[in-house]
Length: 113
Length: 110
Image (cartoon, rainbow over all chains, first blue to last red; front, side, top):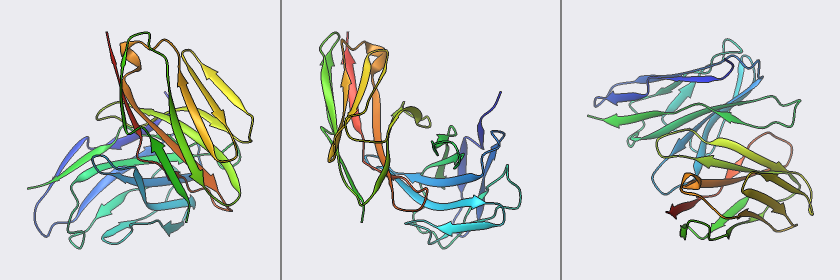
């Protein structure tokens, strides 16, 4: 089945620890995105990548880092510099040549221990 | 800065009671307006995209419309399974970014 796979579903971070959230897609989409969702809030863009080996900061990039070494993969690292990481993280991908509709994964819920 | 405002924030409907959700936007150069459905603890599911004023799209009990300033998502004779948060997003300018509203939380009571 084609789709976007995020793992793990739940993640716990200790103080001062970096954690990495995985996002893999087999839709052959060129663009990928990371969003953060807090209760009662809309989705806020963290980082996005339109092609391999290139990515841009979104609206709330501080305390996060990404890489895009393969078309299928766009991992997000939540660093210790992110002081309030507890949130629901969503990965999406889109085909910029085909209406650019973004399709989402099932999300990763990150909590702080 | 692109602005997307959804109203009402929350809505409780009796089963069969039709209603509409509003998404108003202020953007320069709208390229598309998107509606998604999100169930608790899950990722958003794509419903519709609208590109120009006057355009309409339908899917089962849902119908989306677009004007130059706002979009409506009409829910006709809703069922309990239509309970969800409905998200509106706009794409504008020269990049592929979406700006999301905070969502309309809909509860349909049997």
